[in-house]
Image (tube, rainbow, N blue to C red; front, side, top):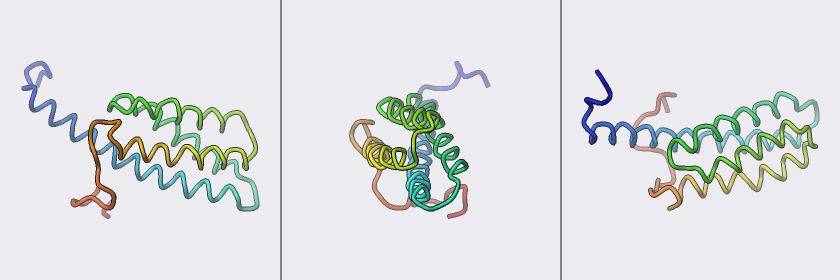
Amino acid sequence: MNPSNVPATSMEARMAALKGRFIEDTLLQTSELERLVGRLAEPGDKAEVRQEIGQIAHRMAGRAGIFDFSALTPRASELEHFVLSHRSDADLRDLAETIVPEIRRVILGDEAGCHVPEGPSDGPRSDGS
């Protein structure tokens, strides 16, 4: 089907569904960031943890603007660049502990023009939960 032949309401519904999925995914990624940041305080090599934090931040920064969450892009990019700059684990942890709550506020707040209630969604997710 040619996208130009799709009625506007159908496209709007698709975009709304994709935006909802982005919100859900971002909230899950935010929880994963919190878990990874906690691991930065543990002894041992943190190269893999830092890489995961950078990858999540990169994806988040890249997708945020598509769904009208452009306020997330600079903060997620800052987190990604901080990982790449090889700053200390403690400095990375401090920055992430500041940015992660900001991400959650933007996603759940009025900045996006919508509100998502806290807690699990009503329907099953693709991960089976």
